[in-house]
Image 1: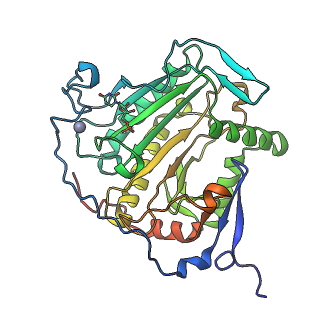
Image 2: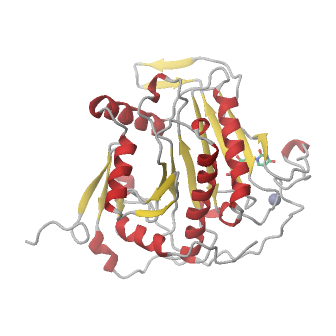
Image 3: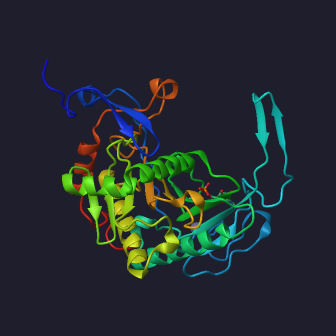
Length: 349
Ligand code: H2U
Ligand code: ZN
């Protein structure tokens, strides 16, 4: 038997942040494809859509009118999943039937007044304004009573369930720490106690040394396909300096974050010449929280597309019942993304 080769042999990879495994089957990239082929959504968008509930001046559910904003615009989600002042209580039967009330806030952030743009097509200076609004929202929501976690995210594209192409994201602030962040906080904290250094800090140093999975970088941030990626073109953006949240970034780092978001989303669009769908979000924690030790700000991009603008990966079968699995290796995905042009295929907007 030949010696173990990550490019050829089926193997499991460990995610030290969540302590979960992913099965990698690189030999399967050679199998013929007879699966789904969808028609590409190729609608041309207007700069202003009179029917869009996010465009400046238009009305939203309940009849509220958006202001004529010219940069970013934030509002309380009209269909919020969490409410600030619900009844507190719990239902508990033998630890088998358990429900606990959860309070919180939900906000919607419009990134631009232009209905037809996306982060990938916005100017870096305009993305900087989005970074500013994310930062101020993080500060104001974190300081409110009964809020322990502020999840900033963007759902992009109809196949991700995004309801509107107008560039926007959401913020959900919770009374408790959601599971994904909780797992990362535990592993980061334990790593810090054991190694006296940061988990992602050490991981980033390793990746910079190896140069096998780096997609893009600037002086403040690195974008890479994590060794343990599940989605075909999944990436993470990691700050070079270990800080627990957005509020700790200096002016150059805020600019750097806007720049790396632009670099990553442009490459994504250039991959299949399409407005690339994904779920993106930040993992961060307030520095004053007891569990912040060792935590390192980062973004996850989870994009579903696999081999074209229309063919996506499904998390079904073995993945629903057992564990996630991928065929194309993270190294091959990183190589593909890295080689793509850093200029958007549609040109300047
Ligand atoms: P998504 O496209 O990512 O679902 O985000 C749009 C959000 O906007 C969604 O959460 C809210 C929805 O509840 N929304 C309003 O707050 N007001 C509206 O008039 C329509 C949609
Ligand atoms: Zn719009």
